[in-house]
Length: 371
Image (tube, rainbow, N blue to C red; front, side, top):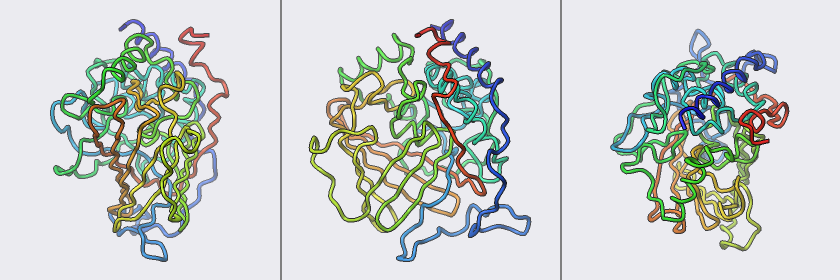
């Protein structure tokens, strides 16, 4: 297994080295309405912006961010720290591929990942130059599956971690969703068998990100590529630079449809309601792992969810530059009990998403000799 991972990571290094310039694809434009100090730096701790009806406004471009330390005996370290040289090289990577190269292994799929996609990842992440901040710093996931010392290329600038909340849920890790959950995720035998096949046998070759397919929410939330939130009174639209993901969250008062009523979608059916300053988003009717090899991937290493899954995301904006998402998964077919993890996002000012066509120069399947 080690030799396979090393070979894939080497391919990743080539992809990153041959990537496009990390310069911005679009002209520099200073965003209006952003709180700044006298030097023009964004005041990330400024008050939460609000819409005309007084609700927190989540609009803007966001990058995943560092957050608190490990919370117990899980398999991971804190997001953005820990992982050894491999993660430090990627610095949580300016791309799934740098992530893969950096933090090693299971993302071999993620790593060599978007094949020709190293380019865009590097561009979007590194171009920001630290102004808005991406998840960077020294390190990344410390999943036991990945050893130290595999090296990588830092494509994101280091940023300060958000304060650790000792009362919050475990922090999700990019490769292993339950990396900070004591004992790991509570798989059922069905889910454990799928996870083993995907990661230990198939070496994550069917990871949807690596194959330019839509990803699961936790992969999308933690992708080193940015995402843009457009908020209206009736709907929130999330544009993910990675794989051109597009998600709709309805705020118009409609109810979550019964499980099995609408056709299952890659991103499911999402309905949001406000609980004070927290947006509670419920999602069901997803394409589960039963559908096919690229379906129902919760994380890079292949933890599955089924077509019976229901996600509940509690989204807050504690300050101007900080978005916090607590995600709970209920899926009796895949997990013996519901579980919750936290993901932090950092505001990325004065930037736009870049064009990312994953299938352009897609090299992943050829390089790991699938095709």
